[in-house]
Length: 206
Picture 1 (cartoon, one colour):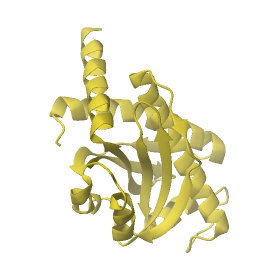
Picture 2 (picture 1 turned 30 degrees about the horizontal axis):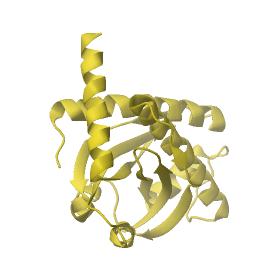
Picture 3 (picture 1 turned 180 degrees about the vertical axis):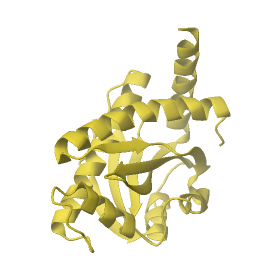
Picture 4 (picture 1 turned 90 degrees about the vertical axis):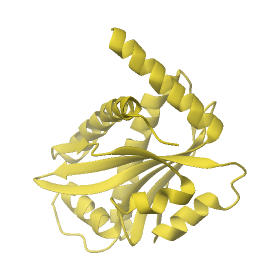
């Protein structure tokens, strides 16, 4: 499946709402001004996701994974490669101390960043769809990109598609780029896209 330009614009606008909430929450939490924007939105079958992800992350990745359920159900991920994850944690840390590895405290910071971002996005999408999601506790994984994709394909009982959303963090004059991925079955994806189109039409008429 591919998204039309108008669908991409609508998704980008919605995600920007969620990202602005995320940036405000992170700014308040850390005491540093945090900006977060969306450089790119695209849709891909799971089997074709790795080349697309390569524009944002590579090698070993830090992944915050949250499962959500309801009329639209699936998996939400925040992905940063390890270098990007450690840089982001350093930039967000109160003292700004350099972080060279993903120790326990760094993992806690990254998990909280993912939790805030994923919940903000799913909250905006829930409002759009007029549904209430149920959430599993987000989990942080450190693994290779290929292993992460393989885990999505194992045991899947339907064709699954992904919505890939670039995520560019700007903190204290430095940028870190990663991405958010929504993985949905065909039925959930159709509902989601229909809701986006309806929202865009209402926004145009307003």
